[in-house]
Every structure is written in C-alpha cells, then in structure tokens.
Image 1 (cartoon, rainbow, N blue to C red):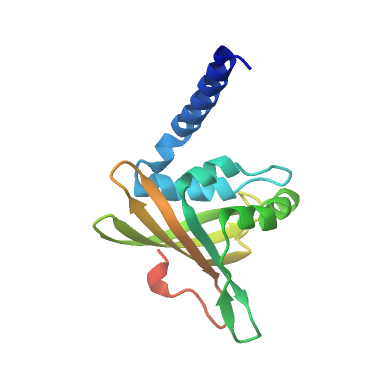
Image 2: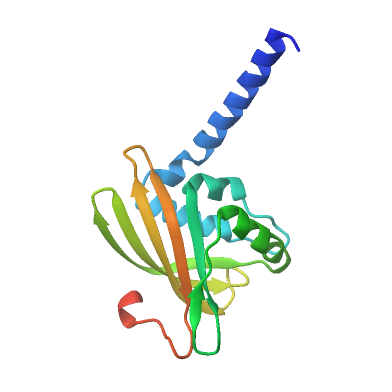
Length: 170
C-alpha cells in the first residue's frame, strides 16, 4: 500500500470518528440531555435495532449496566454487565418485542463533578400503550469538564412487595 493510500484511510477513519462525536455531541451537554438520550436509545418499535453506537457514546468505557435479578422468590441480586454484554443479551429481544421506557420523575444530587440521578421510569410496548412495568434507574453521572458521562446504570423494577416510594413519583 502506498503512503497516499494509508493517508486516505487515516483521513477517512478520523473524519468518521469526528462525525460520530459531532452526531451525538448534543446528547452530553447537560444532565437533562444525557438522561433523555439514554431513554431514547433503549426505546424503539418492534423490528428496529437500537443505536448502540449512540449508547456507547454516552457511557464511560468501563461503565456497568446493572439490572437486579431474582435469586429466589424473596431475594434479588445485582447482575453486572458491560455494554457489550447488555447488547448481546438484549438486542434480539428488543428487536422482536419493541420496548419504550420513559422517565416519569427524577431526583438529582450533585457534588463537584459527580451527579447521582434517581430516575423513575415506566416501560411500555408502544409509545401510546399502557405501562407494563415501573421502577427506578440509579444513574451515576460524571462531568469531566468537557461533557457528561454515564459511569454506571443500576436499576430495579417495582414489585408487589416493593412498590415505588411516593418520594420517587411526581
């Protein structure tokens, strides 16, 4: 390969990376923007693949997605996933079923560059459908001085024996 060809490849890859960053830059300008982008990214109709590149842009490289899972009838445990684990486990299910999640309330606390968001959500099969689940996303955010990042996302669904507290509803 010639030096010119190498240079063209490098310019193409660099422009593609810059385009991706420009494409999602508005998503990381504020706490509100990154939370909105998170919900938009995981939501979508049946038959549609999610924009995993966009979600990857929101998360720090080592971010964990941590759903709680039943360990028994009375006990729940966290399940630590990388973004790649989450995509592998959820991509096909989301395409086959469709899934929409929306924030219905939020409590936020910050200290310096660290922000913790308690984001109460409801899940639906279609945007106009009835909610089939509710819960709380515990979202750790960081602002590095240039942009916002999701450091970790830990969530638990509401259950009959563990209803959402009124303080986390509007």
